[in-house]
Length: 245
Image (tube, rainbow, N blue to C red; front, side, top):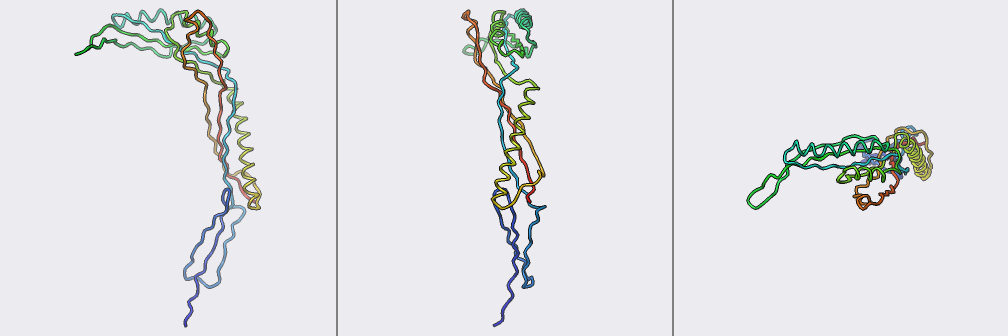
């Protein structure tokens, strides 16, 4: 009986993040003496990720209010709203806020009836934004705007100044890198390896401002509007690849 030589099989072990994978390669009609490829420390890496969220108290706020004017013509509607918008802008600036006009529009207003529609006039809408670094004064700004002709409060947004956001981001990045190296060390130790230098680092930033969109009605009732914001979040994600020794 004639015996055929067995095909040599090479096994290469690849160390991955959190485990060991094996690639089996059939060499075909190779010599009977099999050889095994050993991975080197320079080629072995482990990749890990970490997500960190840092909270900070807001130190900036933006109040958006709207004045509405109506008229028989577009020009009349614009004229009617401009007086209120000017009064709101002047009053908010007097409170120390930085005021800008964020949006202005004029549109026709119709009375829809069976069989058609009838033009009844025009509506002008003027949005005014007031920015302040005194977040405790937001309620006062709302009251001032309403007292001077604002028809509704469009929204209140709390955020972070550039300096505060940069400080929070630095803390988040430092914490994320510490966590990433800690996870890499745990994985490497499980495979009797040690963690070396970082080969690649990727980061992604995120975070959410605090938005208060609810209507402020205390001023309409003759009271005082009080608003307590929550913290603003700064989010950081890192993906790090480390050498293994």
